[in-house]
Image (tube, rainbow, N blue to C red; front, side, top):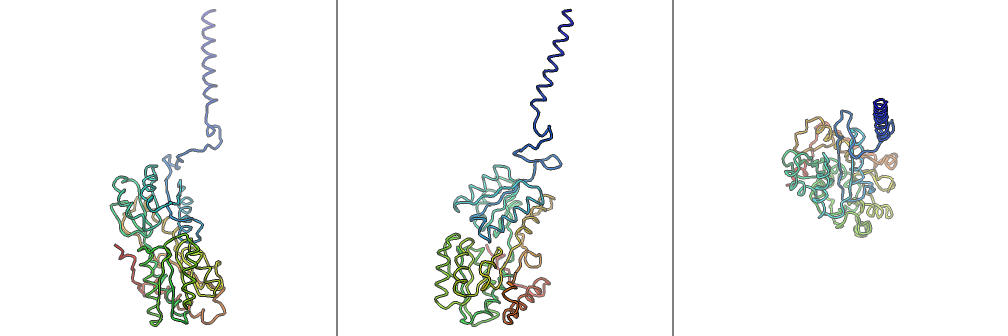
Length: 350
């Protein structure tokens, strides 16, 4: 009897342990979704982790918005875990790069020339992290690589159009901050002007900010009041001020880096677009497939990464504008085929 009781108690104890284990099962085991901090890929390994650092709001309808679109394209195509951060100060660039590297991110897209030096400082400390610098200047080791869009090819077409449009011969450029990644591509604009209308002049003013819309508008107004009849502003979010000034005063302008035609449909003849998602996904694919060799990645018109998009609604029916568009399309076709070469000033940055 005592032995039977002991067997019975042992059996009950075993059943209690089983039920206890079942009660502690995860929601995933019960067929419910369970959030996890480190998502797993289909092969059981940790998912690819990709980060983006920008220095301005992703709502700027331009440079930073395009980069965020690129990050989302990487997330969709590769099932990556993604994160982005707007860096508050240029002095924080190295700190934020380090933070993402410490968090185990495989690829960090650092969106701007200002990340070049910080990435160079960190690359040996984080050999398994790829630092991809948009508008960077040089490759360092196997894990610091710049994406240098051949923007000059698109800016050349913009400069041609500006030279055809101006009546006063005074063309204005307004930039956010005087950095090489803006100065050098604009040489393509100046080249387009010079080869189209040698009598026209190009004047550049710097706002000193990427976000001060008011200052950009003031700079544009100063040029307009001085007789400039074509004014182009590239200052990230601050560009909105320059565009507004042109729209209010009937001055020809252009857009850049984001879809901006709707901001000034009556005066914006066209816009230069960078297909940043194309570049981000291509680099990510190479890294994932193990074919990435580092170095400088420099896509342009031929790769479909640099586009000049015309404001057809404004142009159609206007013979003068149609002629400018036709000329620009011919130039783009010649660049695409290799028949025309535009000097790649950006590749000369040291």
